[in-house]
Image (cartoon, rainbow, N blue to C red; front, top):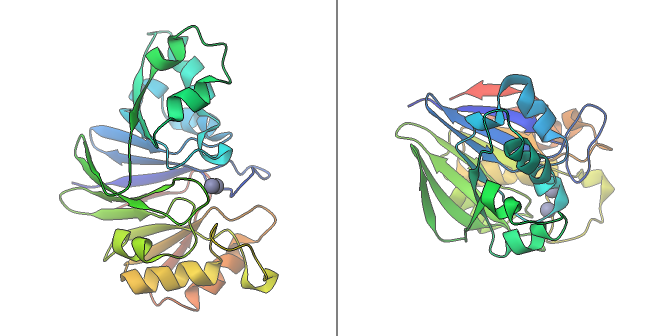
Length: 249
Ligand SMILES: [Zn+2]
Ligand SMILES: [Zn+2]
């Protein structure tokens, strides 16, 4: 079964000009999984889809650039012309209690977004997609993903510093969507948070991934320079995530 990935937001940490924060749509012919829902990404989603088309949402971790538009999604579902609608949301434990603090909650938040706790080491079967969850190397609990159909594998680092868990998550993947927030020339950089382009390239090479899609580049960095760093450490094809970039696998 084919799998299409569309980037709905790829800016790392904060939005940039015409660059929204992390969100990716994974589509088979009859199933749509939204991975992360960062600032502004709901606008991009609605350029081509209706929120009613989304079968499930997975939030990698509870940093605002990965969940902020869950609030917009909640209201879009609640006040949908065919609504009120709801969608399952898989996220690290405690997400509902944490996120509901921001809305004037009359109980509808949990009625529209059905939260399920997801943790590293577990497997989720979402429609035709099999998701294996890995622990990324990031300051809060963060889920890296290995998403498989019967034919293709896409891996997603979420936000992560280099870690053997990502090598496992992306082992022989057809596409590795990888954090490449930073550039080597800006060292020293904080440890245990993100990767440079060079580190993303090394992770992709270690995993034997067929293609690398660098993402989460902080808007103050040039994605082309980040990609060039990655390419120096990796023999496969390096692609650069941009909003609405789409690839069929
Ligand atoms: Zn982030
Ligand atoms: Zn983060």
